Length: 182
Image (cartoon, rainbow, N blue to C red; front, side):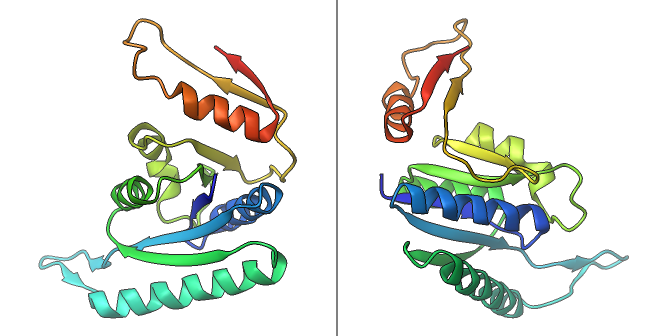
């Protein structure tokens, strides 16, 4: 267990999940990576035009992620925190990055009602379906506390030979949580 990944779109919901992920990383003495994906905004008109260049978008993203990492480092000085910015759709970027880094956990904000959020509300379910890594969706009002129970939902009508049982039991062991299978 060496890495937790969290993602941000700099919204209130994502900011809450960042702090939750940092507290989880601190508790379990693991590294934290804060990831931000960016795309080029396009003005919708008869002839769609980019509002900013890719380079300008990258600079804005890097400044934002540096600020977030600096703020988290002040609050959580006991863990290694790094920031990553990548161009592209959040689901694809997070999938590629997680497959490369093989994290212990991915922590994301969960709110369908955050008007500041750019992508979580529409993509959270896609991310949870696509990623082959554990994803923890943190509701905005949920503050960190030690994990006491884990629930694994499984449909036995499908092939169960590919279930990530080792990963699930490792999380249960590390967190000392009760594991329930539904």
